[in-house]
Amino acid sequence: MMIRIDKSLNALLINQEDVGSLIVCVEHPRSRFVEIRAKLDGLIQFESKNKAVINQDMLFLINNGNFVKNYNLLMQNIWKQDHLNELTGDISLDVYWDCKLDQVNIKDQYKITIFNNETYYICKSGNSILDQAINKNIKDIPSGCRNGGCGICLLRILDGSYMCKEMSQKKINQEDNCYLSCKVYPLSDLVVEIPNRKILASQ
Image (cartoon, rainbow, N blue to C red):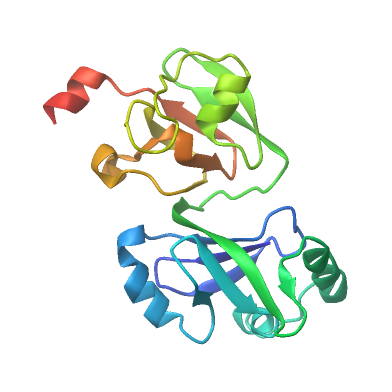
């Protein structure tokens, strides 16, 4: 189940039947955390930049007042995953920032194509682009700390939807869709490019 915070700071409930992951995807950078937290106060409670809580009653509100499909089954599955507080009715979710959600297609795995040499591999849902490449013995993407800090695994995303976990803002270029692959998680098939390091260094 995904709650999408779009460019206008509207909350939308999508992929409501899928409880394989419970996430809030924000189409804004983490630097706007305070503003977004204030804007959505009373609807979604941001406990931190990485965690949020929404009351189950609010699911109807962000679903434009419409009935949520298989609501009782959804709540049971969320409870089984230990994400539902039965006393308060609150649901805990992970928060992702800088989400690109134009082509969201939630499924178990995605095709990652490396544009430079047309190499491709399959990335399981919930795995970062870099971790899955390493698991598949794909060596096209350089790696370093694998924790969003060193900047070695930088790549440019040419096409597709994705979400990002926390990474060094000094090492990326959001305007050019350049992010650290160790913290990028696909939400659709992706086409990526390994940037020319000399060109990046001169920018």
